[in-house]
Length: 343
Image (cartoon, rainbow, N blue to C red; front, side, top):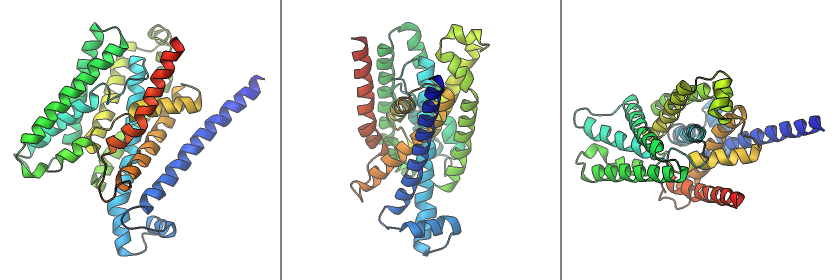
């Protein structure tokens, strides 16, 4: 009987991963195919594999759509991964970079850096934006941790995180409103969340950063699994809990900061996707949940970005609006389910 159950579990895991990869491929082609310029699938294959075809279509695919698609997939996956790490750290499925104010802290410091730096230099480099976002994420996380020392109830901690988020967002909007520099005209749209305007230089930078972070987190699968069982159990398994908790904070903040630096704050991906993945896999094993969440975040953001740019074309919605539309019901259902279980 156990062998049958084991085989069934493996089949479910394989089906989930196969479904996520298939969805990623389908949504990639769909995103390339759809837009002001319709490009047939046959032409897409020729353009991507051989760089042959109509010059206009070549430019659209390689300069506009492919960088945006890669940004959606990698940054969306990173956001889901950051959410999983924060949920592990706080031991609560409602924790996430957007809800706890981490993304808003990153947004504030990126805005400050752009406004201050553009008064002295002609452009802000990618590493400056990521460094600013990382510092902002760490400071916001520091305030959340300070609140956690005084607040025992997770619900109140989440409220504190939301208040931090509102404060950071308010200060950011104030800065954007009164900024006079003409070079930051796109800062407001970025502050709402968007994958548009992604360039290949940006892709190369954040791809290395996100993939390295993913590799580090995946290598931590075993200690994360032990930590999920409780700090005492993790210590008994040889995990240095204090050092491990610091590493979780650094990884989650760096990933969330990187996403915010290049795409702005994006809501609910970090909460909804890990929950959906655990529900599909019917397990919380990090060695499975980590790669599945990364794939799931990419799929979710590719789908939401497709809706954002096509639903009311040529007007484009902010990506955070669409992710909230699809992610918020998942969070509400999760809260109702948890409350019902206690009842």
